[in-house]
Length: 488
Image (tube, rainbow, N blue to C red; front, side):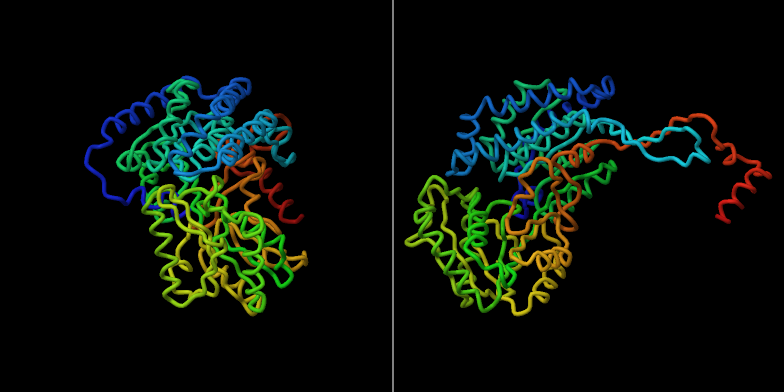
């Protein structure tokens, strides 16, 4: 998610601006560490109560969350705030509540009876301790509270660090969490860049960060001082691959509709589209027809999300201007679409056959610009994707299941969809995360529960075993057993 918190540790800051917040963070970490030592294994009933309290907090503050998100973005559809920022984490809570006891149960493992007799071998999923969650600006509640569900399900204590680019959401989240949880259980650390740096240096038992690969590397370096395990969700240039049978109105609707979610400011949005060369104009025509028939005034409507800051709006404009100056064909999908600088809303544009050296082909776009890149041979196009950094997701369209599966097998990515986009990130039961430069680790569902748990192997000795052969001196008994094993 290159733009999500892309410069969170790089921007210059005024000295000591976060000094009180840093002191409070250190105190909160110490409080939670001490509380975890006193109570290291909450039972299922208490964990369920915590998850229910979190869901109730979100559902009970619908209007305030809507207002905070709209304030930070300049323009943001209330219905989408409901869907993603409130119902999204609430859905994860419902999944956790349904399956929590199953997740918490020991996982039995086989043990060779000749050696271990009636011993019982299990994996136990135990709380890690105190977990940090560095949330991004583009989904302040969905990612601020969504992973919190699985962190609480795993029995942990948690401190959330919202992005400084969404101050209204950050302050509201801090207020709501404070009213719902004790500080030594869950709290929110609100502040700027000095606080973000300090946050990554704490002796966490686990740290989750959502942002850019560049900052992700800095997070890992800081975490390494305390050997802190990390979950990194880092985005990347997610491609949509249209196989020869994949250029259809339904595919275009899925791609354009997904791109317009958050106006492109989403880590699993479609960054660019690969289309058979002879059908590139058809794709553009289908996209133009879709927008002008179904959403002719989208950028002027309340459904259009504003760019998070004026600087981000200027960056997207610069990407588009560079492509225009290079001679690439720009397709304005919305008739008479224009930028509204007050709300930072911007219409969606296609860039047909851009030069590979342009910034829109090298950087994660994170805005309403969609490069359409032609290919002549599908296998070559797919090989080009796999030769680059691994994306967070890849989307394949076509009516030949074998061909779509071949594309999936040829491209490594964090997640994928066939004949759809972004659904892999919406399912609360499906593990979500990146691979390589797009991240590591998983959250959502049982995968998130296990991510934030310590998987502890436990053997309980039974009877009728032969484990004494492991101890010296190694006499006739052990030699006979070993010889028999080699002869088997």
